[in-house]
Image 1 (cartoon, one colour):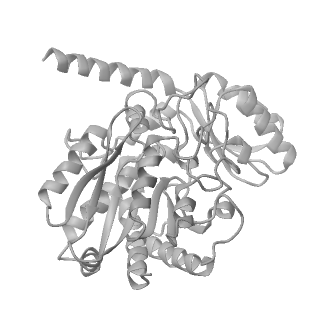
Image 2 (image 1 turned 90 degrees about the horizontal axis):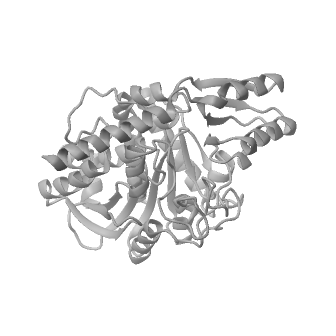
Image 3 (image 1 turned 60 degrees about the horizontal axis):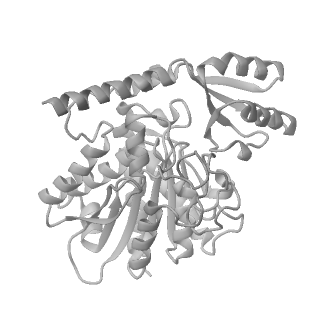
Length: 417
């Protein structure tokens, strides 16, 4: 009982810390019109703590590009004055971040147990991986592919009817800790697979013919930290030699143009590439697993947020992939499928041009390993809520994304190589 009280007390304290942390913080959207205005945004970011939401680093901001960033409460009027004075077009997306954070928990499913329509903490997700495998032994098995920096097991679910020589699709969620809608989708996908197998022809065919590897959360330590200490945390939680700054951006940590465009070699930056490719235990475990299963994995899907984009290689170079036409037409058709449900508009294309250049990403790395169907989803929304999408949007977001994922999976099944 005492231990429970201590835990409850700790949870209350951490919740209180978060309350204090984000009260009256604002999220701004700016659209600099020229290089001079880009310079203004750059100097603003170098003079105070600015957390870039989109793009994920100030160095990527270009003229006519929408940029979203979060500012400390005591600096927001200063920022607003500066933007007004310098004539930079702006609006306030989120007026009080804490209020928006509280409002994100708007699900009707206020249970303490696992729910597909609310955000689940890591303990709940970990227990769910065991349950879903135990309850669906013919369809789901669970394994551990490695452990995180802080020693948490990385659970992988393998889904599909057992059969000889099956090809597979690998899907992961939760690369960036604060993108909570991402792990929610991996859980939803598993739910749909087990609940509709034998009922929905398309899903049944997919699971009979292919295996799906689903890694519900890549960056588990970071995800835990967003629940206990800092909802806006992005990176892993590893210590960096010679720096007080913690963590590496796991999606800049792969050996694909590593640490060149759109990645930073400074440990304090949000896009820090790490001390070497696969320096993070999490990215190494993921890469090792894929390398070990290269003979069967035919597609790689990685789920991020936000921006409503469907991206394919490359992000580390402006060079187009050899099967560009094919990837582009798949992305076009999958985006159309996605929009058919709630009319949610997605933009698609190669990462470097459709969003911004970023080296060291898992999708480019997988593609360069020979997995020719490699896609990154950036889920809802386009910035109204950004990383703090309300729980009431989990179901529609997952339903529409599932249509696109099923389209891609079906295409892969019909074009096995």
